[in-house]
Length: 76
Image (cartoon, rainbow, N blue to C red):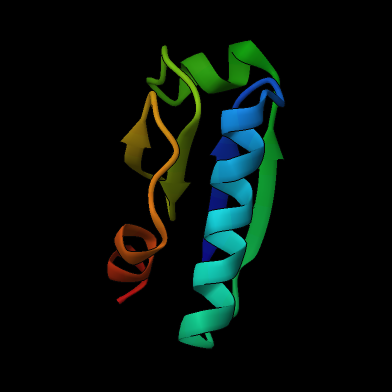
């Protein structure tokens, strides 16, 4: 599983990454978490508001940091 946390590194982006990591631990799921800060790469994903979370190429959340329960649901 590949997870991308997209954003420039603002407080909301940092929160999104921490939430994703906590959800992975809670669910016992292994994944590669990548931080994407390049705006061109983010735009190529179809994202124009950050933070955003992308799991295996599917955009799950845009413009806000998700809560842990949401992320756990996305993980299955």
